[in-house]
Image (cartoon, rainbow, N blue to C red):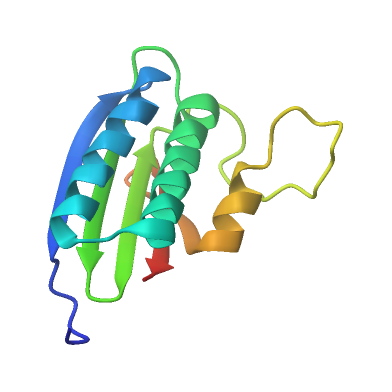
Length: 135
């Protein structure tokens, strides 16, 4: 494989800001991972990161009736994941919380941080969170 940034497989979609969209996003990513031949732990990690980012977009950046968007690309030696939400709830800046076993939720960005390089920015009034995993 070469080091160029040509996508081996890619997909994008607009999804309802609804918990059912997490599985829709995972299915879409699974399809392009399969098409690119990404298997095993890298596949599992990419699906987990996508799930966490989509869940955050729905839980913390959206309201009922909003849409989020996802973009996935498998490139030589990497998977890129991008999730956008309308920043309707909560802080405009995401923070990976410190571990606390008593907290029932809030570990998603910790997981993402362990598995991927990620960044956040606001583009045209929407939060865009990107993650890149090395294959």
